Length: 522
Image 1 (spheres, rainbow, N blue to C red):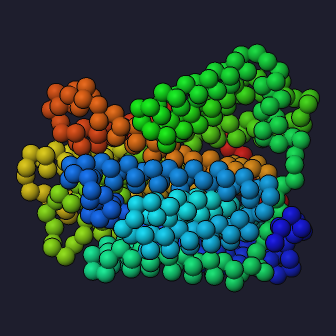
Image 2 (image 1 turned 120 degrees about the vertical axis):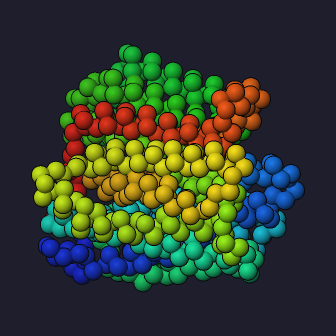
Image 3 (image 1 turned 180 degrees about the vertical axis):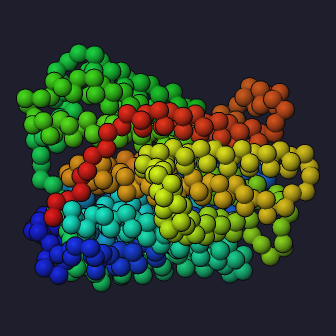
């Protein structure tokens, strides 16, 4: 169905009641719980499956690095395709139809994983379809939740976004706990097939609530849209245009150079970073020149988006740390002492379990206690603290790696500490950032701005691929050996330092950030 024909006003059954959570929310939450089980069910066994099955044609010392490259390339795709999903939802089909049809693509990807467990081409095709489906719906689902609220009940949105994040982790917990056991006992077809069945169930749940949702129609072509305002600002000439052109030249040069050194994915992502960074700086320099051609609110909307993108970029180091718990930390866990029945990838179940505990603890205990003492942190302050906790977790895990590298037995129980630190950081960065990003997005840019939020995860995983490519260089590995640390431990301390620097920059920039309110009017 073309949602452009759906009237902007919600049907009577979906009109929100002030002070009450909209009745259609449980369908979206149920859909998300099943979808997240399916995603994390396959994602959290991916590294182990690659090392023990699909990449057996490589030598033992090559499999770990190759598995990390495949895993983080997949994650890059998952968080790149939100750009496509957000765009087609905002401009053509609306959020509901985009979610529904890409969910079917998602299901097809799971089927490929189950069928082609021993065929690299078929398996990688499945990963590509899952990246497209999962990534494409990602910005739409979170923005779709926000669309169910207006000014009369927006105070309940934070509760629902927290519940939304809680159900994500509920699905992730059971997937992380069970799928490694299914992989070991029943093989890849069953272990990848069960998540596929859950994804199909998620699609059915979404479809069952189709008559209840508030559907904000896609925006018609707007002569005062984001890109049009940017184009007008740059067309005025000046230093800003020069910066944008330099960004294009740098993007082309980095693509050609890095494609030869690090492969297509690294080259493409670096080119994208160059275009967005220098192009955005160029627009920002001469945005005032768009006034008169475009209304003031359109110009201020672009300014709001550009300022928000700076925050998103500064969050990227956190995702470098966070997503490696499913690759680097799993490989570390494999080298630690543990019960024979316990699988290394099962440690990842700690993350969603802790999230389910920390979200209600923060909302019901920690934040009220701080308010009672006259101290209430803003969203950006919470995100800054979250970056610091993420960095601390990698200091701890790096210290553990030093012990392992010395040949000393080290129990896997100690991984609980870095998981706790990283998860506390995640709650402060991700759960807070999800709602903050929606609230700051201008009405016509909801899906797109959520896509940029997801793109920050892509860039975070790009840093991982770049570091992995760098340590294959003999000069780099030689310098690391002279530091006295093993290769893995050095990388861990490097990422910790990277995150501490990002936290300092984020906190400094957040001090001057002016928040806005872009919730839908009642």
